[in-house]
Length: 560
Image (cartoon, rainbow, N blue to C red; front, side, top):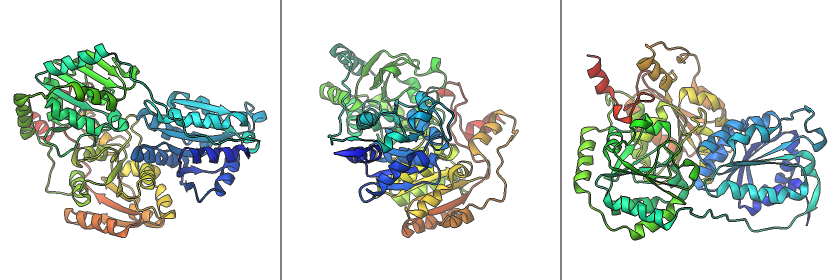
């Protein structure tokens, strides 16, 4: 059938099973929006308040569902406003397709109104990108974009389309979505070497990263931990793969990881890294990381092997498939003394906070209790992010959505909207510091416009908390530009943007506020006022060995 390029865009979205897109219209993409208008009963479009919010919403949709998220923007500033969201998705391996439109082909390269080389700009932060100048290749380009975004190690793909392509016509034929399977690249000999390492280990430790979430390998990871009789730690991106309530679970590893995980990994004789990239926030000083251990690294991306930490054996392949083979060949192991030692570490080094006053850890624990650990939690970046990772007990994958690699302030609210659109059955709560919330709080208007029942919790300490923590500990308490004591009233802002608002100043107000927000089933902001000098502990100084983790008690003892 003969269709315009704009109609082809919509038909390709329908082919791929896309039910929701996030975006903002403009001149060059008008034809696509006109075509979307004709199919509004098949594809829901969420008009965000800013293109960055659209990118984060597409990202949150993808993380919450495992499907490819889609965002749209016009040329020039519309396209460049997507860049931070695209980079966020790239760093965390999120499948996303960003569709932008550009000026007509004869105007390219002439500094035309709202012209920008968005393909060139995004080249370093996309898995692949395209600029489409011929309507005859548009459909196949879009199909390849979705296949690339969702296959192997996922990532964002950008498709930029000149406006004349969206108005030109060509024959279109429907096709089934392409399924791309990336085969494993390890040998049988490498598999047997891995099994030999596992059988010989006396003090094994499992380190789970975001690749385990992407692979859908949570059942295999849990079965492996039982068969191997090993403790398990995770990264921020790996939350929920292993049940946070399980006795084997030792918490997060790294800069704000638990002492149990940091000390245990430093003592183990075999570290099994699953879908993890040995980030600097995990490793600390690489020369002192797991220095007594052999390293077994399982990852789908061979570029991650030996990039940050040298491994003894690596298996390049889909984690789920690799673990199925290992679990099928590995005999039941017993490490009674080692597990007992880990249990003693857990008893000696529990997470702790001041329970006498209102604090973020207390708020997180109450959210966990009231939602029974079943909510989807999104966060921004900073102290609240670490507390959300430490004190909410994630028992399922895809329930903590957070910017790990890029550390994007302002990520969480858009991601929460996207998550709720993708998982309407789930309670979706964004936890943000007041500094982060200021960056994209206009997306509350999006929530109220569509009556999307998300809960926005603001951890309001009137400072840039994580930066202030560093200034306190390492910069002589010189609080340069981190104090936010001004006249902004977040409750009035939320009400002005069409949402309900609740202020919390005391511990006893936390549970009623959360319960009321859940009952209202509409967008609600909860503004929680906490002390400005609360700190995230444990903490490892930048570049130090993870064995140098310290907490408030250590700090008090050192200052005596």
